[in-house]
Amino acid sequence: MNTRIFLLFFCTLLFGLPSRSDTKHSISWLGNTFPGGSEQWVQNFVTEIAVTPDGTLYTSSEWDEAGRCVGAYKDGQANKQLFRQYDGRGGHNAWGWGTSSKAVTADDAHLYLINTDGELLRFRRADYGYKDQVSVGKALDMTHRDGVLYIVREGGSEVQLRKAQDLSLIRSFKADGAEDVAVDAKKRIWLRSGKQVRAFDANGNALPPVIKGLENPSDITVGSDGRLIVCENGTARFTFTTSAAWTTRRR
Image (tube, rainbow, N blue to C red):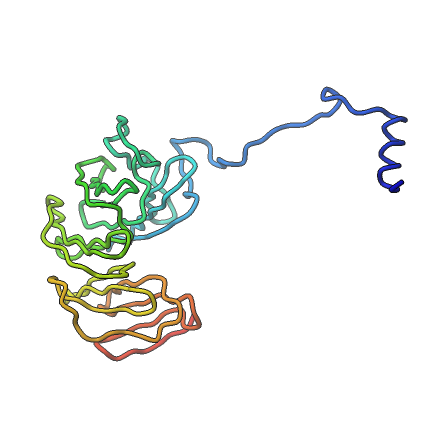
């Protein structure tokens, strides 16, 4: 007989099996580590971010245990009031009061997000209030510049340009494989597709240059100095360009 089995059998004969009442225990659910919904906490994870000139960081994610799928962070503080579709009156389908999202951006007055139901929502930054929405289809990324929203549809086959003023469609064009979008001061639309980044005009016409040879690019944006920034998960962590000339800085 196996020694461990024998010892277990012997101890059972000698002491008997412990009853439920003999075992002192406590149960604690570690899913929520914050005092409650009216307090501050950092969401479970972040999918996309948008930073405004005043230093506010807006984040989006598809899941948060307590519904903070969109967060606003500034000066080390998180927003206490949540963004809620229909101001929390119900009728939403996406998680997080309708704010579960992969795409978020913000201008001086409004926060824009596209939830997992494909609805483009607009909120007032001043009081977190819900303003309006339109259906645009599920999206992977979104940015804005000079009153225009640039949206990459899920599946990477379409880019939409919409007016931030009323969310109406200006135009759209095909962009196979697009995953991320950034727009520079010259209104060039930069799209990351696989391991390359390409530029387009507002009508979807390809522009030079085509940036190739990337290892594992994960996102793109345009810095405050106007340079395109490609975030790399490969050897080169950050890659910058000015016009067509590339320089590399390693983290």
